[in-house]
Each structure stands twice: as structure tokens, then as C-alpha cells.
Amino acid sequence: MDEAVRAKLGIDPSHKVVRVSGERSVRKGQDADIDVFEVFDAEGNLMRKVEVTDSTSIHPPFTRIITSRDVPDWSERIKP
Image (cartoon, rainbow, N blue to C red; front, side, top):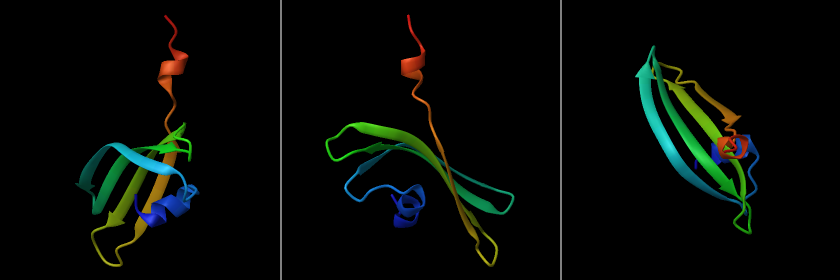
């Protein structure tokens, strides 16, 4: 994970971050990477799952925008 993204999300340096999926798109002058990360604490417990969109303009001045949203854990919501 990029250090700028880690800082924006406020992830503790001792926490492990694992990329579980991602995709890339280029449209309307934007190069966007959409990744889903799982964040684990120092003991290995899942803290959160977050989707990060890192978008950069392909035209000068090459503006970069990083947005994120927490991904809900649907497994806990669905009961048999």
C-alpha cells in the first residue's frame, strides 16, 4: 500500500495491510485504481476492510485524489 494512502486512512504502522482485489480504469481523463484492502492489527485480527480509489488526472497538472470507504462484512449480516 502506498504511504500516502496509508497516511490518509490513518493506519497504524504496526498493522498489516493485505490487498484482496483491485481493478484499473481509464476514462474521462482519469486513471483510477480501485483496490480493496484488509487491515489486520499487530495480533493478526481483522480490523477493517476498506475500498480505496486512487485517481490521477492524465492531463497536466496531474491532480491526484484518494478516496475510501469501509466495506461491510456481509457474512455477519446473513444468518441461515
